[in-house]
Image (cartoon, rainbow, N blue to C red):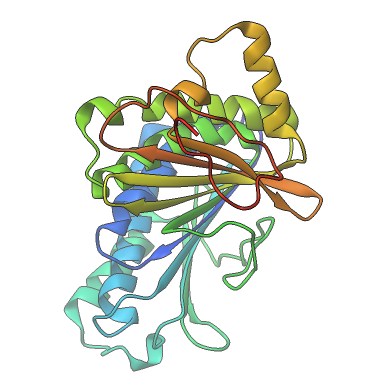
Length: 301
């Protein structure tokens, strides 16, 4: 398999999503964004994408007996190695038919593509698949990522929840994941074209206030409606952003791109909440910082 470029900073990601078969597209989009930022060579990325997709497919097919359940993907890039762990809270590997052709082929493919791979039952139920790419072959150690743990609490909630370290990964990952979720919300082509601009603005905000810390985002799809949360951010981030926009005198900003925008207090920090309509661009937006009584600002209010 291919090598991993060693001249880039370490990075990490954690994704939580339901185990629908179509969720694999979101996983692959996240991997593509991180691979680009980490400068993985093409062969390594192809192996990584194929093996992780296979592990996620196995969760959707086997883990919950045909039902849908939680799926987590954790990734770490450090030195010359990429480690990925795929976790579920399903019935566990002991209950899977060992003669299942689909399962045997899937695990064989993962073992062939990864430098190191291991499958084990999780304490309390479920399965954990560990993979490493770009390192020597042998056993693979548990993955250590900031905020690791399938049951770790967080302030962000949605159909897709992603944590990234550092925030510089946000633009590439959010810019790829958001269009997939927006497609489920039946966004028009014209409106979908705004999504990368939204990702660019949010990435700039995150990097300006917390360039070396972790940042998370959550996406929830409705009918022609996409709700996005970004955080944690220092308290007052949205107010300072709005003041900066006013000083610049306009241009493409979250004010012109979003339908609803506010800061939600989260302890000593805040979470930025953005609502995007899939039908049209808003003509007006009232941007409300924290302290708005829990209601999102509506255009024209």
